[in-house]
Length: 457
Image (cartoon, rainbow, N blue to C red; front, side, top):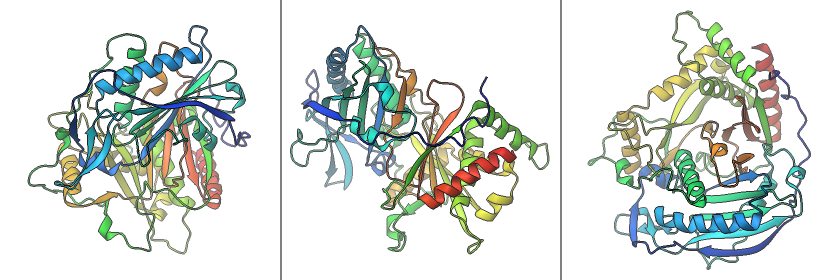
């Protein structure tokens, strides 16, 4: 039985600053069969996400799969995957006729790096703690690339002294969203096990093309036109890295804590008769984070300051007709909720939970199409104070490789103070790990609010 509040105030573990990683081999790998050279259309959702996502997947030692065998199996599996995902060995390019970013499906190849660390896996600290040094487990060395070459995918296998290893994967976000990346991992695992594909991916990104002519049928305050961006507001693009000093911290909610938050929401329902269907784990966690984040940078000098929270919603099943579950591109849009900081402090918790739910409910077929059409007319980005990106239920740690399931999967923490990540806890269970990066003063306040609201609930 989990105990509540067991580690909300636990001091941060000492972090290794250097994992002492040596690169042994870095090379390009190519599709195992000839692929057709073609251009792949990118949707208006894909083209906004032109940055890399880096994840690390940790594995314990396996007697039948020492690291050199894993290297060979994974390399061969990736070479086959570059045929199934024919864009993955290609490159992004601008189509000068349409002025759109596209994927040039060509056999330029992906990167594959073999490395080792001087540590045992159990010496590198808590795997779910956001250690910036984990960046060493994802390719940092660009020497093997041609000048100016930017592959869409690079994998690195780093072996530890104990026989355990980490697979670090860097992919351009234009290639996959969280769900399609999970499918990609399932397929890699199947190929490595010499089994048929787990899922045949759907590559038709025209399914998310704008309508002709585009019809923006809703206001979209959650989107920001680049031309609207004032020089005094450099952080409006939520995906931009921050230049200020940031503290990284992981906050944990046990399943008991999440149950308490759900009870608090139901108990604070004003009429008592409001639907409690919206009281899901995700909604209460997001509402809770919103309150803490908004109030961590709130002061009495600006009592009317508003806060907008953004959170990703998978639109595959919300479209008419629905997208195939196997859709391989980005099929996620940002829902939003906005309130004044004073309201976030004073309103009953249920009100915040309902606002989070309303944001997701708003994401109908017509609303999603309206955002996509907005992107056809405007060059812009999601616009909010904070984006909650949930990897909590994606199931990366459930992927069954020939060498077993990962002990843990995590992102490499990035210097973005407006993105908060939700992750499953190490070892499974129903709790959640919340990865936050904030300037030190805001982090101190966020930490205090996180504990205060939890103990008062």
